Structures are given as C-alpha cells and as structure tokens.
Length: 262
Image (tube, rainbow, N blue to C red; front, side, top):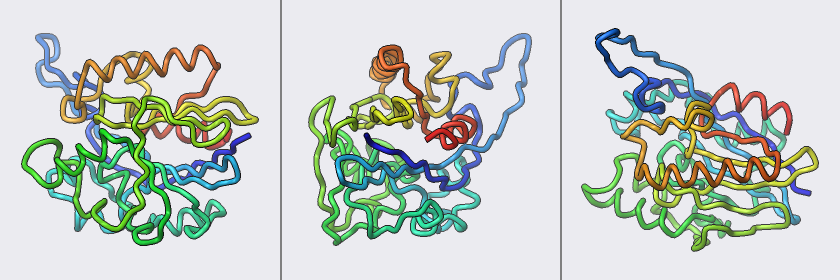
C-alpha cells in the first residue's frame, strides 16, 4: 500500500478574505468589518507507491521576498521562506532530493512550483495536467490569465508528463484527480494507505470553510466558480464512498492533524 509523509514548508500570512469569499463583506449591521490576517501552511508530500517515490509540489522558493511580484508578496507574505528550502525540509523528513523518482505538480502557481528548478535537466518525470500547463504558459507570457504564474518557475528543461484525463493512476492505490476551479488544471489525488484513504484536495479548498461550508475562494483565486463547485462535489462523494480524510491546500490545523496520522 502507498505511504504518505507530509512535509511542512513554512507559513504564508494573508487576509482570510482572499480564501473565504465574503469573509469581510460590509453590511448595514457591520459597515466596517475587521480584516483577519492569518497564517496559512505551505506543504509538500512524499508518496511512496508502486516502488517509486513521488514528490507532491515543490513549495515556495527561499527568495520569495525578492522574486515574487510585489502585489502577490504583499498579499501573501511568505515571511519564513528563507528558512525552508526544499532540500532542507525533505532532509528533515528523512528524504533526499536525489531519491525523488517523479514530481506531481498540483498546479503551477508560484507557491507550489517555486523550487521545481531542483529537477531541471535531471530527467525526473514531472506530472502536470494538460489544461494547467497551457494556462500557466499563457498566463506567464501574456498580459492575460493569472498573475500567480512566474515563467521562471517552469521554463527550464523538464520531462513533462502530461495528464490528459479526469483520472490518472500512477500506481496501485495512487490516483490523480482533475479538480478544475481554482485553476483550469488543478490536480488532487486519492491515496489508499494502511491508515485509510487520503484525499488531497489541494487548492480546490484552501481552508475548512471552503470544503465543509461550501464557501468558495475569493474571486482573485477562482478561475471558474462553476467548475469549482463541480470539483467540490466530486471530493465530497469520494469522501463519503471511502470514508476518507481530506487534506486542504493551506489549512494549518488540518495539515497538523493529518501530518500526525500519516
């Protein structure tokens, strides 16, 4: 059976309203609501399945304060990124970058693809959904799309393995799920372990309010509301069928709970 090790990659400070739509909407009763700036977790995962070791995402770069565009770093302050290198955090979890057989990119936003360059020119397979790869390059090289993509994150020499369908099995008990909404090609996963089934929702749901209450992400983080809601129901159905744990993209409390279990 596959095993999962969750790797803590640091914290990002941001206004809750970015990730929970309407969190600070004014009303007649509360015309000047207070903004809540909270800590979000950045994480990666190491998945051992079918005799291979997979890395889920690559996290925030250590020099995020210098290379991220100001509007993004100002809104999503990766204040401890300099303390969290991919190599260092993997080593703390008992792994070496050189032991990674393949990388799965949930999507190519700058807080998930920030250290993908560790695998440039190595021939390491990098799995990404077709719709994500196209949208990322389109966004990074034109004035259209999303500002959350940096061309430098994914313009190197990579062995792209393009996922084209809504389901893609990497190994027994390890299946990728296409969950569009946050981005066109967001990938999640269903992983069947000895400790139970883990559903990686990723940035389909930043925090519990997105999943449990069905409150969408803020407009700036939502590529398609309609697709987001379809993906949410896909995850909820899988959770019901498999009595699964659901891991969100940036919810610190949920991450810490599941990191202690898997």
